[in-house]
Image (cartoon, rainbow over all chains, first blue to last red; front, top):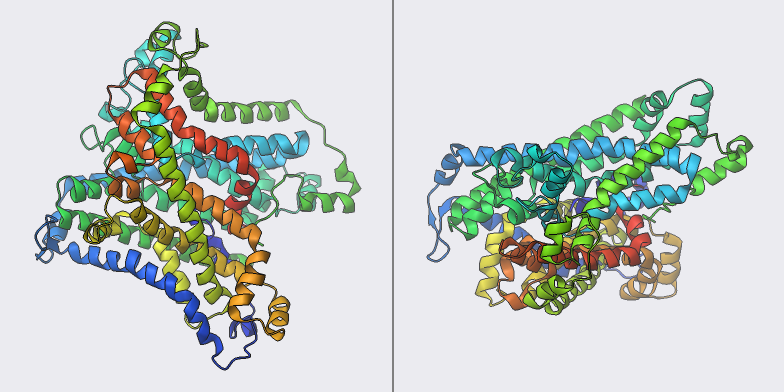
Length: 327
Length: 300
């Protein structure tokens, strides 16, 4: 899940120039640093066999027609031209945008508020362990296998006798009952709710750690000057935790573009195409309709989108860091 | 070290208190403070509500559920739902598969990460920045962009429907992240220690195994715990590679069996409970390590 790519911000660590040119261990032997390549060989071989070759191969497959049994036949750009005219392909990226709202926008904003509440207020005025307990609670869904988390929510929103519908009926809101995952208008919002629930703890934990860098004296000075909580947040906190905001939004956006488990376990992309996502769409092409070439084109397109998004983010982060240091 | 202490009354506030006696006094709590505390607890209740619902209803008979509804306390303890799921999917076997895969991936993943990071972070070999970018990229890619060629390759070498296919692939994916993280941790390793060891005539391999690994054990154990959880939670790769019942992992068993809508409501609840229980137990045991690890790297 999203934690899988923590640590982008480490790029910020600047190494002293002089040391960077030599290894950390003084070289007695004449072989020099080259000997270290030995340690990298197993890792590089594994990376090549399991990631690089399949990746390049997949790009090649996207230019072929392949049913998985006979050798693939080269068909040039046919898959790609079909892809750009494929309504379902565009719909699947539309769903991704909805998932970005559910996994990036809402959790980041809510996470900022919750982290500030826990750190600033509950941690200081009440008790630090209460804040830690709440943080751990928010984080719990992040650790669940996504398939299990989906089943859990799927069980609650079951049609007819599901917990949500039963509770709605019992409190006299029977009119609001619905076939949550079974009707096109509510299936995507239901999955979005699942993703908010899963994702929320991640920004809270990261932001709370970031807030520890804020100098309390700075806060107190601002308080004495009569700044209210929001003013302090805007002029002090938001600047200090900016790197973490970048990390969280980047990793969560990539995670949102990759969503597969919840769609597979809960809706299979349906009803109709209302919850179709690119990764599930390519999975169907690979393993169900065995249009391998077309599936490869979809997954290559998804890869390109992810790389472009990451590049834009890292660029924006570098620029904002430059601006920040020039201030 | 990349693992900061996360307790709220951490070092920064303590030093501020020493310098600034005024802040030692707890500020008075106003009504709005209490309201915010209540809101924070309400959010927590919403977050754990699904867990509580599942816990409550896994021990009910379907008729008990029908009469009492999802919020009632079980009329009597009913274990048939849990039993049914346990036996239907042969749960102990799925548990064993998951533990076996996750443990091996964690160990292999850390080992590969350490070797890579030793060359990149300590050895600072030429072109290391590009190599680190390569590993980072491997971590970012969608698995769908590799899955079909991998499926084809492993079928050719006879490792399809074999846990080792999953172990190999996950080891590479996770060590890609580990390499990235450890390279930067190792690059800040105290040079004086390494120089002293080199002067004493330690070889490269000895420096790695006798000095760097023992000293960075806290970071490595955080990595180990995370690799275990990530492998446990992995879905697409086991789904594609482990087709026979005997090879499935816990999340896969829960997802595929629950997909069949024929299961009655409390058995479904029991399946979700059994699916989340291992994670919950793991969370309670390793809570401190986990909270440290989540922020490793992001805070530096």
